[in-house]
Image (cartoon, rainbow over all chains, first blue to last red; front, side):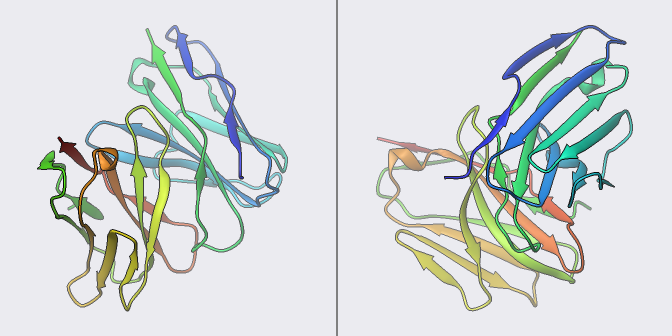
Length: 113
Length: 110
């Protein structure tokens, strides 16, 4: 079974803090993704990566950055957390081409006060 | 207009009922289509891919209508365990662009 893990299930941070969310997958997948999920808006892609050290902006990259130094690990960084970044953050990974299934981690529910 | 639109529901149906969800997409270059299921406070998981000729997996049937740009999911003989949010997912050709619908909530009651 594919396993995607995320560093925290719940996180509470203060406005202006730097926040790191980590994601690890154990299936040697090339592609990794970070989404946020908000009620009524569905999942929105923040960034994705199709190879080590490669990254592409998704639909809502502002206020976020990412790092992929190793194939199995994809980190999402909130440089200076703001209250509008309170959300559920979901990491996913997939193998190969666009028709391949994405496997999701359990999510991190982030509250920014 | 959203790129992928779903009726948010909720759909409240009794056990044993048949229920259908539709999803419309705006980009005619869309290439791949999926239904994911998301249980409350859990991550989305693939339910089934949607093929041009339509496909069935047990009680679940998925259809694609490219001319009208919509996909559908039919659930027959609903079970309590089918209660979840169903996400329509569309992928565009030529890249990694994946669009998730906001989801349709289903409640199956005894």
